[in-house]
Image 1 (cartoon, rainbow, N blue to C red):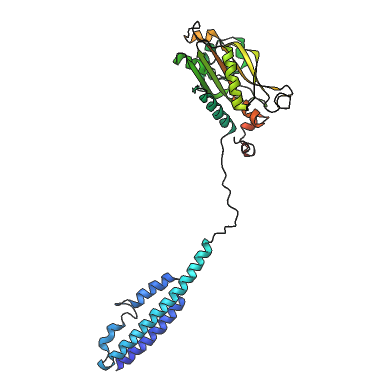
Image 2 (image 1 turned 180 degrees about the vertical axis):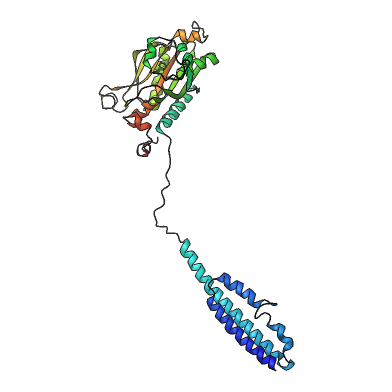
Amino acid sequence: MAEFTELSEKIAKIKNEVQDELSKLESSKSVYEYKKNILDGKTGLIGSLMKQMGKVPNEQKAEYGKKVNELKAWAQNHFEELDAKLKAEEMRLRYESEKIDVTMPAVKNEKGNLHPVTQVRNQLTDIFASMGFDIYEGTEIETDYYNFTALNTPQDHPARDMQDTFYLSPDFLLRTQTSAGQIHVMEAKKPPIKVVSPGKVFRSDDDATHSPMFTQMEGLVVDKGITLCDLKGMLDEFVQKIFGKGTTTRLRPSYFPFTEPSVEVDVSCFQCHGKGCKLCKGTGWIEVLGAGVVNNKVLEGCGIDTKEYSGFAFGIGIERVAMLKYGINNIKQLFESDLRVLKQIDD
Ligand code: PHE
């Protein structure tokens, strides 16, 4: 009898204890843990109560069992109730933190674009490739021979003064012109030759339209019966592709040691179409490149029979084309990487 009373009191105590403990639980996870412990058949406060049955006198066993089961059911209910309440609150907080405001302005996804010089270089390469030219990329360090001597510009030739050269040693220099590539190409390949060669060149020169490093694209065609007319025809086609339909060219006599005759090539102003504007300084024409018929001395130096073959060559300044096309008046703007300038140029 004494055991039964004791056990009944224990049950009441456990109920209070559990109620107390439940009011302290703050997460569904802690409810789950607590519930597991309390109802554990071996060690749990409630779960182990049935094991006490042996101590209960027979006539009270039924009542004891009922009380334990009631307590169990009560606890189950309370666990479930609290679990549902906490889970609902947890869900609410989760929704709150993961809420997306679809009306918020999107984070701007900055898009990069190629540098204007790269854009023009790619455009030129594409145009010449479409006209059947191969691409040859030379090296930025050259020997004096390839940059000058083989281009009919021996030591002490006055034309060497046309380009202020960065010498690395008496024999090696930073190429001043992509024309050096002409010689490499003609040494490596027999005519017919039809090649363009883009790349960086270097001259000790620095003002609003000149930079110590700039980019050129060389062109060389060697075949049977090539004349200045072929050059002019090819250029007329080319300038329309780069500057727009209707653009024409004009050749003016010039001098380069490696071409004979040599010409300076102007294009009709693609802004005012010849009427005269700021871009063409009122003349209707804009100077864009140097060119000419390859000097026989250069061909012969490369072992090409000048009785059979002739050629033309041209050299175009890529920064100059970029400046003209995009209205940039100081070459430095192409090297300062000012995003306000660069972002405006995306062809
Ligand atoms: N190499 C010359 C220069 O840099 C340009 C040129 C190339 C002229 C090919 C004629 C033929 O000024």
